[in-house]
Length: 219
Image (tube, rainbow, N blue to C red; front, side, top):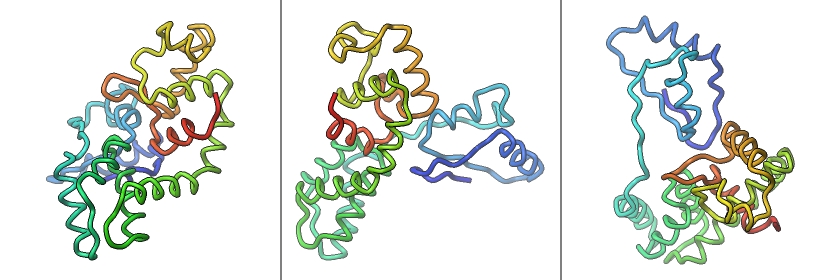
C-alpha cells in the first residue's frame, strides 16, 4: 500500500487498527507503506500506542540521484521532440532540492506547455504558475497560524534552512519572541508538518509554500 507523495492521507489510529486486522491474517504477502510525510510515517511504526508499532522495517529513501533523474527526464522530453539541457535540469533540481514531487510537477508543466529547447526561464515560469495556483491555500495556511508560529515559519522560509532556531543570531535577525515561545511554536509547526528536519536543519515542508512565503510575504 502506498500513499501519494503530495496528498495528505488520513492514517487515524482506528484506520490503522482496521488495516492491521486484515493484514495479520494474509500469509506470504509483503506490504509496503510509502509516503513523503516522514513524521506521519515514523509515528505509525515507532510510537508504542500505534497498531503498527514495530510492525515493519523502516527504510529512509533519499532523493533520486540528479544524473539518473536527468537521464530519465531528458529521454521523455526527447521523445516529444523537446530538448532539456543538463544545466537547465540542474537549475530545477537545485532550486527544489531534488524533492521528487516538486521536480516532477515543474517538469510536467514545462513538458505540457513548451516546445523546442527548455530554458531556465521556462522552469521559473512553470514554478511560478504552480505557486500561483496554490496561493489561496497558502494564504489560508498562513492565516491559520498563531503570531509566534507565523513569525517563526516566515523566518525559516526566508533563511531556507535553519540549523539552530534557538540561536541568538537567528532570534535577533528576525526579532523573534522569547525562547520558550519559540520552542512552543517550533513544536507546533513540527506536529502540523509545516516544517520538518532535513539533513540536520529545519525547513518548510512544502517547497512551493516556502517559496511563496519567502518571495511574497514581507517580514
